[in-house]
Length: 235
Image (tube, rainbow, N blue to C red; front, side):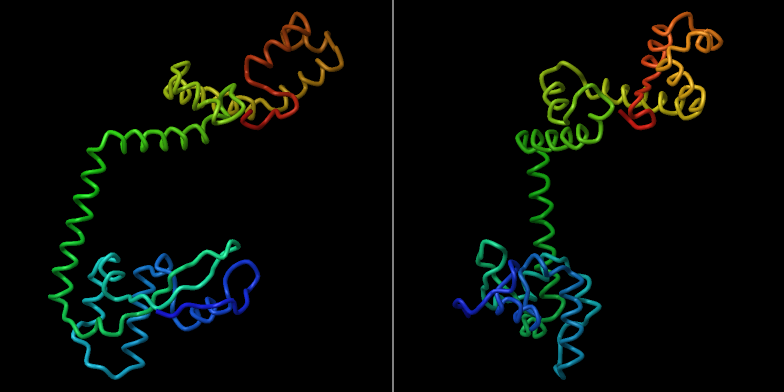
């Protein structure tokens, strides 16, 4: 396997040799998607007159795990990223075409069974389920905290985890806030006029709208969730 010395770097992304490897059809394993591997196989078969024992149609039937395992081979490592980490680069395994679909189908079936068993093991693992629930709650809190009194999603998440509030309570708050916003938008002109009259202390105008005092008008605006500085946004 080829290893590089210090021969120059391109910005903060990769070494010159890493860039050359990319241009030569070599990439880190994470970049080799199923589509990329099939494209590389297509180009190789079109550019080289070889007798392949497996067709492109058959290659496309294989899982990405099998394709990465059998149709790629380790070529070299290069420095990449701002911290010059060592990254292994892979290229198309040209000897993969010497074996037929039946050979790969057995490997593919075994890989799929391993993946199924691994998934089942995770699903039955309490610790994994706890992690999954924590991630799900974090996503929900990022979306929902703006409908609550909490200033950050972390604050909302801690409140839920400590039992101060439930996620169902938060969804109810969201529904209520959206209803408030609908009402505010539908009555936008009237609400803005009332807001102005409060600032002007125009009690006679407020009386015409059914308010006995400025305080009553302010209380009403608060009850519908109207925020003077941000009247038509979520919070």
